[in-house]
Length: 91
Image 1: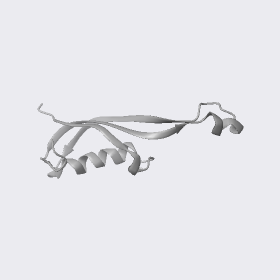
Image 2: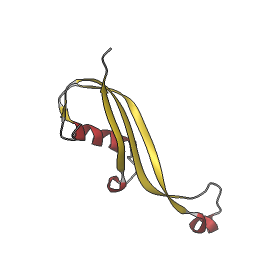
Image 3: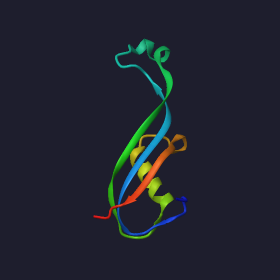
Image 4: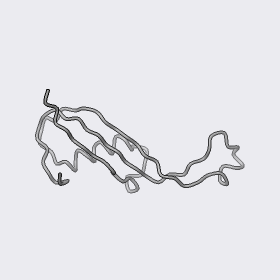
C-alpha cells in the first residue's frame, strides 16, 4: 500500500512497530557509575488496536497519528516505522 493511498471510512485493526536509538542504563546503577555503565541500544515499541474512521484520510496521516501516540516521549526525527498494517474489520 502506498503511503499516499486514501483509506476509506470504516472500522480497522492496526498493528504498528517502531524502533529508535536509546541509551540504556542498567537498573540500580549508582549515580557515580551511570555514565560508565550506559550503552547505546535500539528500543522497539508496539501498538495495536481497533478504530473507526469517519472520513477518508491518507494512510500516511493515519500512520503518523499512531506513531505520535506510541512515541510521544521520543524525538520524532529518530523514530523508524518498521511495520504498519491496516486491516478492515468485516464482522
